[in-house]
Image: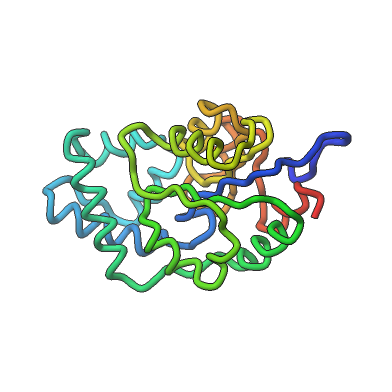
Length: 216
């Protein structure tokens, strides 16, 4: 796992963070919302043990395992998001608030890119939401890479000046598609071994490794 900036390399000016599984510990809430959606839409319910076994698979493989047809996905995602808005806000992982504050103080522009809603994200972040300068929330048919490009246009940053940090295999793929440095965290949804196999540019073992990467 790499947690330090290579000698002579300029740290990114822009950090684009995922929310669920990266900043907020929402796994239990998301499992509950998924189970409720399974009952509502009639796709296969899984136990927590089965859900754990899916953590080394990409999003399409998970959908196949659950028996979810792609055409139903927008309705299911909207349903889960609505459930999340009525549930208690998930806690942030320990150290997240201090990490965001340190990056902002060091002059790093922070963005949040999430398929969750901005309202849900702001509830989860609480006071730390003030550290976020750009928001690109809600699911889009064009994928997360399009959200990354949207933030790049807003900030005027080049792809090589930005890093996307998430906890899933699709986050790595989206970062690569948009030309960003791909950062992954070892404490979220996907197993660290699965993330490592996908070859991110940086795999952060702990929250403290993120400001260390920026030289903060």
